Length: 84
Image 1 (cartoon, rainbow, N blue to C red):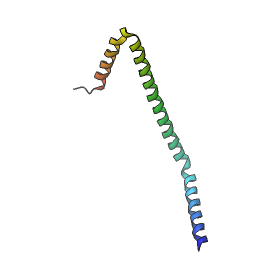
Image 2 (image 1 turned 120 degrees about the vertical axis):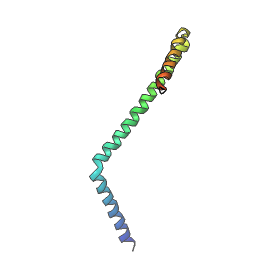
Image 3 (image 1 turned 90 degrees about the vertical axis):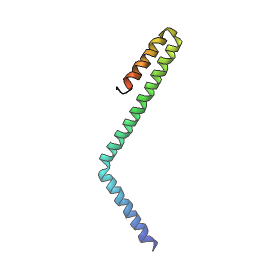
Image 4 (image 1 turned 60 degrees about the vertical axis):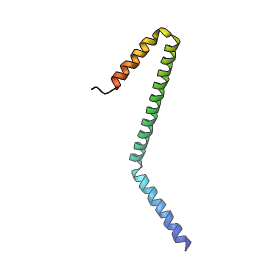
């Protein structure tokens, strides 16, 4: 009684595997593209955060550049805020 069920399970697994093999190139390509996109976006955000931290640190070290930094922040705020 146990054997047919196990055989049926194995055939179902084999059918799933065949189905996966049939559609694998497209799904693998999509999955790899998604992973690459996520990795690139994480890297870009990390680089932007690092750059902003370094520039902020440099500006806090050199105090005479502080005015330019506040101007840059104001300009970016104006650019990012929706125009009326």
